[in-house]
Image (cartoon, rainbow, N blue to C red; front, side, top):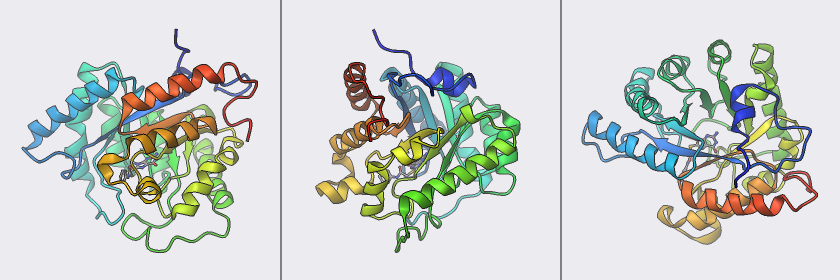
Length: 295
Ligand code: 8Y4
């Protein structure tokens, strides 16, 4: 028997996860990139059917939500227009919503994309810019969906040049609490807000390690914590592994994030991550501490 996922509380807007022992499975979000570099372009139809195939697999492997993104936010990437983003993601969201019972998240910063995506079936907005674009908070509040607010220092094109902080954990936490407060004032209930330290977004290796080791500082805000560590460069740096050989490193980081209190984990490799987290959750049931509590 598996414990019920925390998804009901967090995505349905009912009472959140605080107050009792947290021994439920953390949720896994599967990454579905719909950028020209993610599928060798055989045109829109081929791209959509390949994306749908990947969504089917991630759903079968245990992802509770699939994050569809049409803007590349990798270091050095250039911006895309709302029209281009919509053209990339909407056919994919429609296809997933028509076939799979999975939840869909839209990875975007643009209000126009948020509206179209939610109209097509998305129930969550994942914004690496924490709803700082003009009209984004009001749009998300009006749509009545869950949101993930991520910290980023600078903009994707330049953020990795020379990131600096006085105290990375405090600065990231204060920024996220400020953005979450803005969302609450606009009418988004606390139970629908995730905060995310934004690993690799204007952070060097030491910043990333500090944030993961002290994730408890974010958990202590009582907002649900989401993380994205999958295949990121900290693994490449620590282990000297290329992009296609970072699964074990990613699973290790996902497990660390879970033990430090993360509730939603964004990954490329759903099956091995779900296996690791299921095992960890069985062990956690025999602990007198909740994840994130013993730090
Ligand atoms: C290799 C693998 C190289 C991955 C670069 C990357 C996050 C996110 C991204 C995150 C949330 C990425 C959209 C960057 N990362 N959303 N999005 N949190 N909430 N890079 O950490 O995966 S894209």
